[in-house]
Image 1 (tube, each protein chain N blue to C red):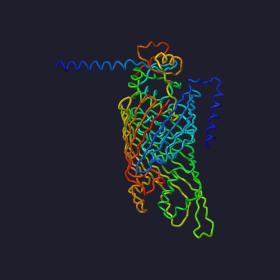
Image 2: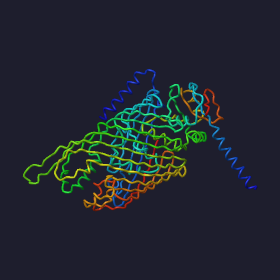
Image 3: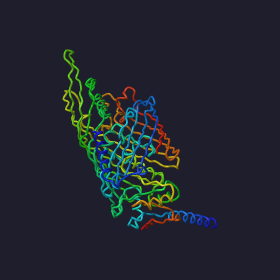
Image 4: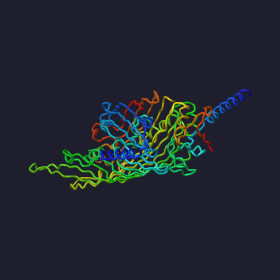
Length: 140
Length: 422
């Protein structure tokens, strides 16, 4: 019985940690973006370069982090790809001449700086990162 | 024609830049990437590409591409590329693709220039070795001998994406243009070899043959990929047709020895009656499952009227091929893959009876290939791959480099390759 309780506790802790990492990712957009919410499916299409324009016709400019826990959590939650597969997907787009890759940034501070500067830009950060001058997008 | 297209593209980009005074791009806007790979192939009993029985380092690719957003909606890109694969390409430097893409909406964009063609799910990345586990894409589908018919066209395309509610979304592209082929394209060379087999005694017709010039002036087709609501599952359809011509000369030797040989101009009409593919891919977690089927139907009206010759093998050719594959990212450093494919160069002679009638082994009529691959990711940009091909038959290798007297039905090919990308 004690073993069962330990197992259940362990699983609960693991699941909580797993869930927390998903919830930690915030989608941020430039203040010029009028849309304030969208679905996970929209996010997937945007970051795979399928959806290229906002509803008002403004071009979407995507930005991604080069690596790290926030990057992995974002891809896992919204794009359904591992970092390696996401990277391969964009390399294919590049070598086939069918698109322009997302801006690749080293730090979350760079991400906030880029998204706040570029009209139509969208990116992501962890929720603990201060984020002035950008809109936080709601996921329906 | 190639120079003309690139010239037009450069001119359009220049006009757009000059007429948009507010426009300027910085070095940050120019996306530059590239890749370099070098491999080694060694086959036993038969030749796979070129002279692989002796072992061959003629197996490399190098490419550099640039993409720059000229305006928000207009993207210019170009890729320079060179490759060597046995008897193919020999490191000639080419513009692999160069295009201007204009995005009007998500569901409609326009692209013009030299465009990479979609053929199956992986044709557009066939030269980017680092993007797959296997070294050589399944040859039952991505045939090197047919590469020129499926790699790129000079022309335009309409493309887009449409969401279809709970059914996922569709990617589509409709393309049109001209497909120039290199002199003495391998397809023609192999057709002639097949012709010689079927018409033994007429081999001398081709002794002094002039070079073949071939162009498909009208080439069009479409691609539809359904990205299903099941994440990672997509189904693709492609259909292409075309028509054009080929010219050359053949010499009919004088049998009496008293008259000069007769030189005949050949002016052939070529109809690409069908290039169609059906593809399914399921990309889930560490695994990618894929299966693809293709049909290529080419008709040639040679105009040759020489009594006693059998033209059937060159005038109407239907090829079919298919494969299934599984690849798995075992961990960050290791990916493994396995595939099985079959190819029939003449779908109407899958049992090889036509070859047998001419004194050839029946296994020249098919090629069945099992491939096992391992990819070691030394870093994000450097990998080393190993691969073994277990092969039955000689249906997709060159008849010219595999004479029947030394051919073996069951054979093996090993390959090793390293790739860098940046």
